[in-house]
Every structure is written in C-alpha cells, then in structure tokens.
Length: 147
Image 1 (tube, rainbow, N blue to C red):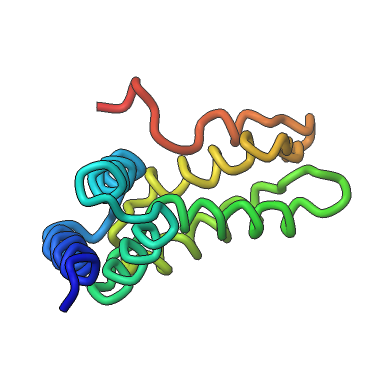
Image 2 (image 1 turned 30 degrees about the vertical axis):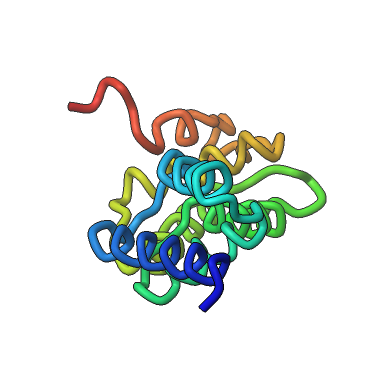
C-alpha cells in the first residue's frame, strides 16, 4: 500500500471509530475532522469529506451538514410558492426528521433543526388560528428558558 492509501485508510478508520461512539456527527466534529485530514494528513478536502460521509453511513451515523442539506429541500418544497410554512407541515417535517434519525434526535432538537432551516432559507411561518398568529413558530424548538 502506498503512503497516500495508508493516510486515507487511517483517516477512514478514525472516523469509523468516532462514529461508533456517537450517532450524530455535528458540524464542529466534522469541521475538526476535515481540518485534521486536510492539514495533518495532507488529504484532499473533497476526498476527506467523502471518507467522513462513507464512514458515517457505514456505522449508521448522521452527519449534520448532510441532514441540513436534505432538510433545506424539504422545507422549500413544503413552503411552496408562497414561501410560508404551515404548522402542519412544520410538525410533519420535524417528525420525519426524528424518525429518519432513528430517534437519535429528540423532538425539541428536530424542531430546532427545522426552524433553523426555515430561517436559513428566508421562509416565513404561515399564520394559524383565528387571528393568524405565528406564535406557534416562536415556541417550537430548543429554548434557553427550558431547563
């Protein structure tokens, strides 16, 4: 095996070992791993990212950036041309995300990810109820007040 193949293999084994410990690979961990692969092991960034995604998939782990990419598309499709997301669609997407993650994410975390996707894509919540209130959107997700 050449030196380059050994570096790829060593990095892949490292990511597999880390993915066994955690089923959710956050952005911070992914960034740290990619920096290690790029700067310490001198791997190409795209190859290192492919190794991270492959190793995570091999261990049934989820990479947050990939989940966000898929979530962005789901939210855009649900909002439609009006660019407004209904409470019903919000709930469906958060439940879908929770089941998609095999319950690695709790309900609040899944709702927060959907809420972040709505805000990231400049979408707005659709009003609900008699007065078309958008309070339902503000109360969803993680909150600093919840202990």
